[in-house]
Length: 177
Image (cartoon, rainbow, N blue to C red; front, side, top):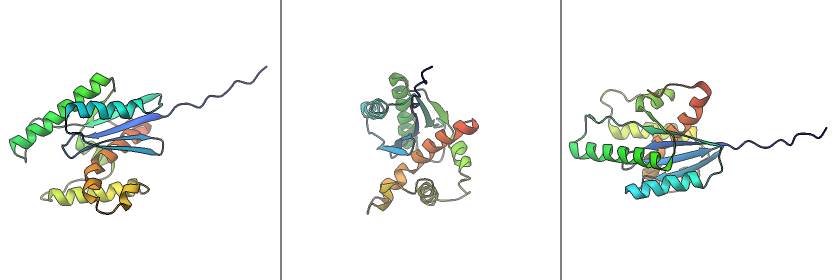
């Protein structure tokens, strides 16, 4: 009887999306990391997501989009409306391209990493702590060694952690709410 030929199973693509204007879209396939700064237009978002998905030979895509509360407090109305608009554009782009996604509350993915913003903590300090944690979770990323890129590094940190949370939660099937 001839032996069955074993075919290697295709990997999964895990996508993490930080919908902020200075957010990012990150894809993880095995040990490979694909990072895209948040495009500035709806068409740019569609193109970015399409490039990410079509450029990968994967069996399935898992995507977590950070949830934005439309009643966001603590920032001015103009900034809140732009943030929620970006969130809505991302939802539409993911749906149009056919990428299944779930919305994840920030506290859910942050809790996974034992991260919590302390009362009265300045946003810059909070982002700095998230950036430090991201460097620990992804120590081999080349961007950490590129001079004068700290702003970009901080910008992509949330999306990197969301993508890794997406990947890791598959093992434990944690709730995103």
